[in-house]
Image (cartoon, rainbow, N blue to C red; front, side, top):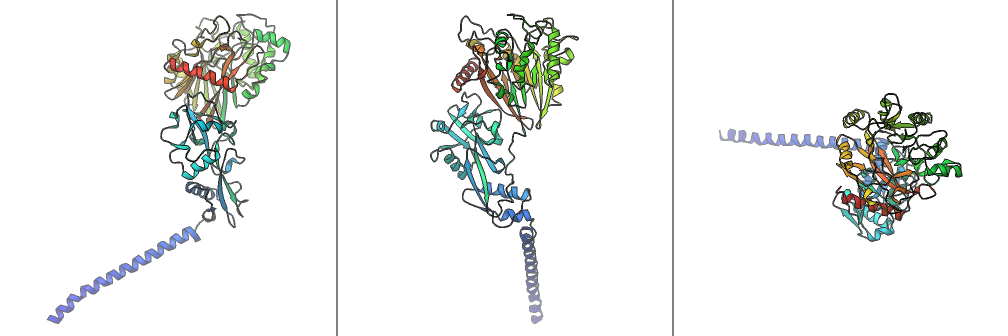
Length: 539
């Protein structure tokens, strides 16, 4: 009995050992299988592009994030090559091949800063930032490219929109929004160039793989082919003293000689033309018309969109307004804010180009239905302002457009003091203007622009949406006052239906009546005035 009992007690021990042995065998098989699967997937079973990506060799100039990005690009674009592929990254302020750019760091500051341009030399006296999370290797390389001392670039702890006037931030170009101001850098504006105006991290691939990877695309940044550029301007009135000047110069392109190229460099160039063309037009101080030859000033400005909200287009009879509208259309130009009759005048202009869809709406606020300036069922004129109608119009075009711009011919600020003196009172919104323009934003407009002002007025972001209260004169002859000789061109940049940036370019004309861009110093003074006006108005 004792021997049997002992034998029976030993049996469970042998059973446990067998179980452990079996488990060990199973685990071993699983590990071998997993290892084989890994090896198959990453070596024998990897795609040719994945094998190529794993074979890239990087030097010290490349950050870990950049290594990962380059490998991904090779694999996703199915690139293969034989032999060695050596990768390095250089940091420079100008590139010739945008595809090989890993990142473009553009200089920005807050939207209200008066600074327009930036040079490397300026950075000595400014605080400069890069976004939090920027790789230390990249940050050091940017400092070197900007000729800054080590540690000069600080890490940005707030949104770029809150950068103070005494500072700039270099942010990736794909982080641009209308809430920051992009600066011209070393003589170039990034959104006009895409190869200058920024600090670029550009990859170079050497070795046997160079030819195979020559067309490797390392970024999804916007380009000229995907960026819709729109130039918008203030008052155009090709009349009075401009008519007398035309009789001596003989060619209306004289007036656009110094600004026409700038205006033409856009996908859409807008003017608010307040004066109709009339054969036999004669000089009048109050009843405006323009000789037919004056159309050449608009042609040489690259105009293709004419706003008709002005209150002088019917001065010498709506027949000439009708003829002028038909002339625009015969040239392939588009119109809005007025038209051949009430129905035509109320239509928006819908622009669809380069992946963006814009809607332009325009209204005459200053004139009543019986004033003669407003379109009727059978006669040409401006589109009448009515809040209920505008609300309905905005709701309708929201179904067709990514971005809605509303232009308003508001009441004019009386910017005509005695003598050639400044009149800063007209820099601010006039009574009721702020309330009206903000209400349009509340109704769903994405931007509101005042096109009535003969002197530039200030601007603001309201609920994140831009309002420009008045753009001043583009083409006119009011040289009796310094304020009315000035204007502002708004250049909007849209990518994928979104506003990326608006650039303000101040203009001026003198007794010669040739509009041109202001010198940098004069532009700075004007923007400082508008900033003072904005603060005084409590915007």
